Structures are given as C-alpha cells and as structure tokens.
Image 1 (cartoon, rainbow, N blue to C red):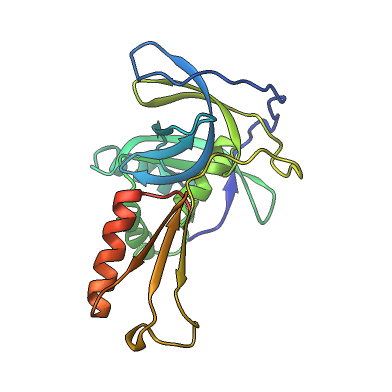
Image 2: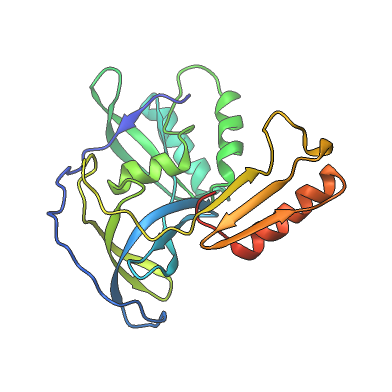
Length: 244
C-alpha cells in the first residue's frame, strides 16, 4: 500500500500573462479575475480553494476533484474486483487503465477506482490491508492537498488567472513561475500577538497579551487562562486575519 504511480500527462506550463480585472458578484455567466492562492482543503468530493484578489477581496471557490486509487495484480483478479466495485457504494467509476510505476519505471495495467467521497479513503485502506498477497494499491495514502496540486500542476502562494462560474473554478492558469525569486505579495491582513512585559514573566504574574492589527492595539485583561483563550478566540473570529 502507498506505492507511487503516475499517469502519462503533459507538463507544459502556461506562459506568463499579467491580467488584472475587477471582481464582481458570482453569477451564472463565467467571469475572469486574478487571485493569490492562500488556502485549500478537501470537502467530500471536491477541493475548496481560497484566493485573495489584487483588490483585497476573498474568493471561496470549489473545484470538483475525485480521488482515484489504482489497484495492480493478476488480470483475472482485477476483473473480479471490477465487478465487485461496480456494485459497491464507494466508487463513482471503475475502469481499467495503465500507469507508470514510480519505483520500477515500468508501465503496468491497473484497475482505477474513482471514489464518490474522500470519506471512503480510510475504509478503502482498511479493505486493502485485509486483502491477501498479490494485490498492490497505488496512490491510496497521498495527502489530498498535495495530490490535488500534483494533478492540477499548481502550487500555493502564487497569483493565478481565474475563470469562475457560480462559485466554481472553471479555469486556472499560473501568472508566476513556481520557483520565481521575484514575486508580488498579496494584500494580506496581518495580526500580531505580543506580551506587555518580559516573556519570562508568566501571564498569571501580571504579564498581559497584546493583539495588534492595522493601526489598532488591544490588550486582553482577563483573570484566568480559560478566559484568555475564550477572549482571544472571540477577537480572532471577529477580525478574521489572514496571517497571525
């Protein structure tokens, strides 16, 4: 379990094309804008991506991204498994394909299982662990975010040319090189945390916590550690900074 396999794909990178367009409300008509990718996380069968536009607006976009696991083994066994999985509830699609094994470099036939939800991954891993020898699982324990970046040929903390429709990501092209030395930072909202006295003085001994953002400063005055955590959480939720 966990061996790597990679499919044949093109590795061309779109050219640099600077683009700056105003952000408008989501509609059924596709629109274009630019955004800096600063966060993403899995949700059922898709990835949620957060972008910051050059005007400082936040965009939450969804990109349908089914997780595909590949099984290798004797052809007869794979065909039997295909019939079983086609009748199961975990897979959206079951089909035969070919891929290049990472360690040997050889191209091998595999059975592809396109899962209906990321939640089925843990169950699939348990099922694979209970199988007899002769069956190999590929791409079954990859980090979801890393797998998404690899398949989409994207990387975080970079500017992209976006085409979106009704909150969905329709098209994305990088506007910067992956390892560019010079880059344009986004308009991040930054909050800093500090102490009012020497760091060696405990909070319970008269030290205080200071929160600063833009031109504002707030010193938290609380009696207990639990109160401090609650008040800190309230301020963070209210201000919602990009970076602390």
